[in-house]
Each structure stands twice: as structure tokens, then as C-alpha cells.
Image 1 (cartoon, helix red, strand yellow):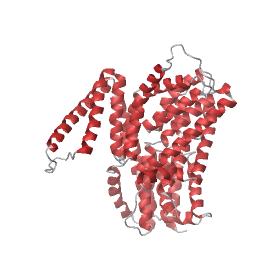
Image 2 (image 1 turned 45 degrees about the vertical axis):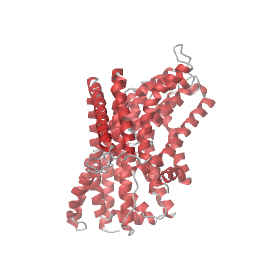
Image 3 (image 1 turned 120 degrees about the horizontal axis):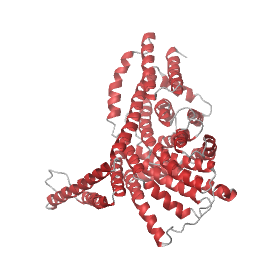
Image 4 (image 1 turned 180 degrees about the horizontal axis):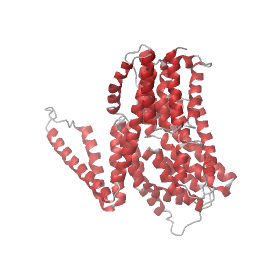
Length: 526
């Protein structure tokens, strides 16, 4: 092993040690990489001028259209958190299933799935679910361990259920690694792996996790009914047609938003960034309608106007300056302007409503904080990966993985075990920005590795990093909002069955990769 490889190993080791010591992720990645770049130049194993490639890379990050979806999805999630739609969903679902043993836990899981698909941000989902559901579950006599484990596990579905922020970041990193791997193999017109492919590949595994959670809760209800008793009947609870009407009232809006956002991406009608913009717009309308019922009129007009615009666009070419549009061209364009004015009016009314309710300011502040954190880490990781490659670390990793026993399978298994172990001390963002750029190009150069399957395997594995003790981020979020009756030990013990379920899902995906590849291939026609 030469001096450059030794420096590359020391670079990774120093970053891990400093992260464990609690130093900021972005500054650690960038600062340590800069120190090792200077050291490599002094020792003559790397030219410092290599860092001249950093500004174009940072510019590419900041202008990456895919990554523009991040602030929009974060805005959508935070706005829906403030809209209190979750409270209505949980109340209605609790009344629907609460008369069954374990029914409240089932309700929490179903609502968690809906919130994960609507928010895409783990922290917001954990806080919302913890504040609303934990007191209710304890009040009705649920075992604190089952209650804490259920809330923590269902909240982390926001890590794997599209439009998860983590999937957007992972998709961007994997696409870069996939193209680099193909270029190294001599393919100068490389294929791409899109965020939409990862979204499509994640749906069945996410629904499979939900099904396994529900099976576990049903088993607990059958074997230990005292741990999840039924809710006593309430005198004012709606029944029959009234219950169906109430269920439709609380489900139609959030489910409709989920269908529009995901459906437009999976159907190829919109890019993830365009769909995220639609989701942010819809979240504002839903919140305004929730805060002030008088805002329902402009909001509905805006929604109808957008639907009419899409229908008109499918029938007539609305581009200005065209002379072949026929007699209907000017009429259609004029109608489009009228519809756009209706959309603008509804948007303005929604912004004014949520601004007066003092919701817009905190949502924008939270969105800015989260987005800035993600992009600052990404810039630091860009410098880190540049120096690591300059020291020959990528070739060293490829040789190390290729020489492992078991070939491609042994290399992937080693990476999965390493990522799971790192999840004890690093969160998902750190692993995505530090580990994935190092190992993904080497893995994707090996024969028979599907980048979408590899991405979903990594995503499910990273989901456990949010959940498993002792440093899972979800556990800290939940500890911060849990009632005093729930101790840290309750949370740690409660999540263990769900961590085992997630590991079981990894095994299932290993032996049945078709669960990941079937939907992307169906949508792409391959």
C-alpha cells in the first residue's frame, strides 16, 4: 500500500473520529479534506491545483435541478405539519379502528404512512406523531414500549416512502456514481438513474414494511391483548354514514395531494422538482383552508383552474408566438391567462391567510434552516470526495471490494453491514455524503448490480440508522416530545422489534430484487 492510499484511509478515519466527537458535519468534511489536500501536496502525492475543480462542482450542486426539489419538499412537509391535518386523521382513524384490540396502534401506522408520503421529512413526522398519539395511547392503557416503538417506526417511514428527502439526495449521489462507473468502463454515453426511478422502486418495499408492522401489531393484540386494549366506545362518535362522510372529509385532501405529487412523477408528467412545487402549492392551499374556512373558495377555484389548465394544455399548444395554432390558438391562450389569474388569486389568498395566522414565517424559517444544513453538508462532502479521489481512494476501494470473497454479493453484503454499523454513530445524511460516494462507484462497476436496487437497499438500511439505539435520530426526536411516563429504556426496547422487521425486509429484497425493479420497469416499459 502506497503513501496516497495511507493518506486516503487516514482522511476517512479522521472525519469519522471528529464526527463522533460532535464537530459539525459540513465543517468537518470540508476542513479535514482541505488539510489533507495541503498535506498531499507537501508530500508530493497529490497536486493542490486539483482543488481548482471544486468551484465548478459546487456550482453544479447549487444549479442541480433535481436538488431544487429539496427545499420544496421540505416546505411541503413543514407546512402540512403546521396545518394540523394529522390530528384530524388520527382522531378519525382512531374512532374507526379503536374498538378493536390493537386498533389504535393500527390507526397510528396507517396515519404514519399517509404523513410519510405527504411530508417526506422524518423529524417533522416524529414530532407530530409523538405529540398527538403517545398521550392518547398511554391514556387508553397501551404498553409504553409498544406505543413508543410504533410511533418511532411509523415516523421513519418518511425515510423510505416517496417523496422522501433522503431518496432525492441518494438518487443524486447514485446517479453521479453510476455515470462515473460507466465512464470508467469505457461507456461514453452513460445511462442515468433518476430520482423518479428510486421513488418507483421504493413504493413496494415501503408498503411491505407497513404490512409487516401491521402483522406484528396484530400478533401482539392476539398474544398480549393487555398491551394494546380497545378504546371504550364514545357517545359522540359518528356512526354509519356520518362516519364515512367524516372519513372522506379528512382523507380526500391529503390523499389527493399525495396522488398528484407521486402520480405526476411516476407517470412521467412532471420532474421531481416540478411535482415538489405542486406539492408545496397544494400544502399552502390545504393549510389556508384549515386555518380559515372562508379561504376554501379561492383555494378550490385555484385547484379547478390548475386542472383546467392541464386539460387545455393537453388539447392545445399554448406556446406564445406560434402561427400554426389555428383560430382556436388565441382563444385558448386568452383562456389560459384567465385561468392563471385565478390560480394567482387563490395563491395570494392562501399566502395572506397563513401569514395572518403566523404560520408562514415559522415555516419559511424552518425550511431555510433544514435546506441550508443539507446543502452545506453537500458542499463539504463535494470537497471531501474530490480530495479522496485525488489520493486514489476510489481505486483502492474498488480493489478492496473486488478482492473480497463472494464476488459482487460479498462486496455488497460488506457495504451493507458497514452502513448498518455506521448507523449507530452517524445519521443518514452523513452516511449518504461520506460513504455512498466512496463505495457506490466501485459497486456499480461490478457485473449485475442494478443501481435502483442498490439504492433502495441502501435506503432501507439507512432507515434503520434513524431508528436503532443508541444514537438513532428518531429516538432523540421522540425522547424530546414523549410524556414523562415513557422513559428512554421504553423507547429503546420498543423499537427493537421494528428494527428486526426492517432487517428482515433487507433480506427479502436481497433474495427477491423484483420487489424493487418491477414497478420501475413497468413504468418505463422495459
